[in-house]
Image (cartoon, rainbow, N blue to C red; front, side):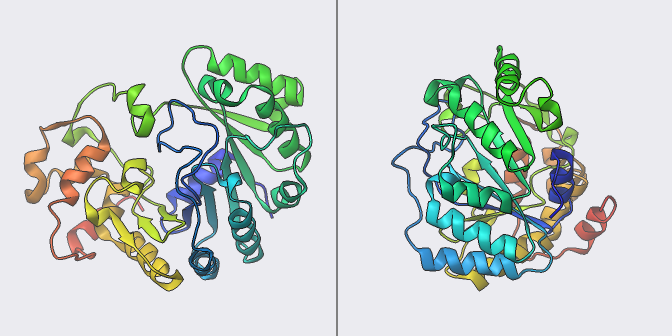
Length: 327
């Protein structure tokens, strides 16, 4: 299957309904102080493998899905679950993208099950920064980069742009892959999120008037958690239960997961949030009072609007027309 670049992945995610994110576990052994989902070594993990198998099979059977991302927590702590998901999704022709800290690369050689799994993916996002290095040391990132590159799978390195993080990451990539590393890996600067443990380290930089928010870039792909929870976006707080209940569905089997995914993808309100953005919706009578109100993030404005929705009606002719302006 054709390898994917970061730009390719973003384009698929922005093609509404073409992808989902499988949130495979809450657990992570690294314990970074800035974790946006508060993942810990003792956090919940998969217990109902029959449910996981059912929801993975459902995602594999959905013809409109061309890509499935797999994250957590740290997905590599779930050997059984990750193996099941990657194999079945790749066999169904889905592009599989894994998000990892590389904690599994304690030595230059990866465990055999990982060596077998990586070639079934189309890209691996490898995260690092000072917090990751403090939690697991710099050598695991170097080992992970070498292992992934050795399979020919593209690497997208995500690194928080603060202090000397980017310079240190470039040095580690040079150590791992040589001076020509940009031909084998992309380095994407990111920013810390004030969610989970990250709320103690980061804050939204400024408040913005509702009318000034543009399109949301994370609402076009839903998130499916290992326990059947489906969310309209990848906001970590929403996944963990915060925010309006209308942003979540709790499914008990694969078919219910599929219905929830399609409901979110087809919802005209969320389509409009992702296309013209919530700022444009403040021109509507229902939300006009939010135009001048200031919010710390686009999520705050979206939550305020979501709470005003009544009746669970997913279809609205005006919102559909607005969404269609840019789709």
